[in-house]
Image 1 (spheres, rainbow, N blue to C red):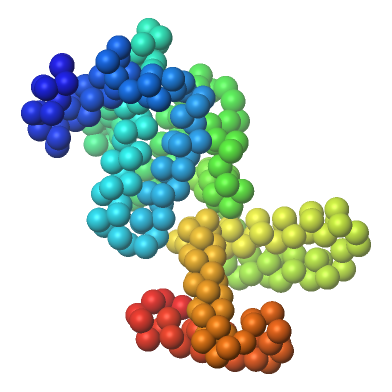
Image 2: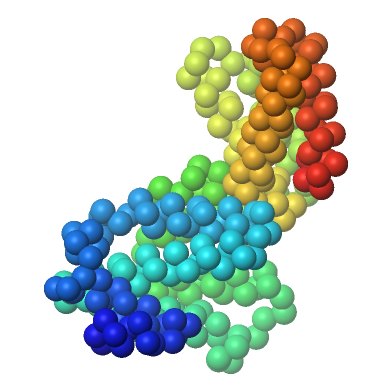
Length: 269
């Protein structure tokens, strides 16, 4: 497809994006695009994933549409790099996931019967093990570079699917209290780090059982805190004060004022 063809093509068609990326990588394309490799694009792909997640957290559908487009661009770009190396192309990517989804849904496209989503997930894990030839651990396919909270949640979700889980939330809550008390008794940085890790692991497990994504919850908490802190500084500046010079009581008062202001704007606090 030539440059004029791309400009006149329907931008809503997947093929137009594929041809656009191919042209940008071609002889008459963009110098920057032509310099990129799988590795050089790695961080950009990760960033686009996080930006899409942020749009989901914010329930911003317009932003999500844009960020999913950016993420799709990364996928098509990586596939184009592979095609140039003779490894695979975008058709291979699509074929791979389509075949995999059909294979992992035997209750839809086969004769397997399931009663609920729990059985669907159990079958999913069984099929994945069969795909690996019965080799490898249950965790071998979890990306090692996932954020720690997300990695922890995925580990615990997979063990739950094979029946290794708490029978009651009450027992897990007791475990959380136990881990919290052990932090107070821990001696030295290394022991405290270990105990803190155990507490976080238990908290992620409880969040998972409650249907709460721990990674998403912490991102939201981070945003709430930074918003409140920024408003606190704004209030201090308007009052002609330096935030760092305020007493602890004055800062706490600003904190409560910031919460009220954000609440009045309709922002969840």
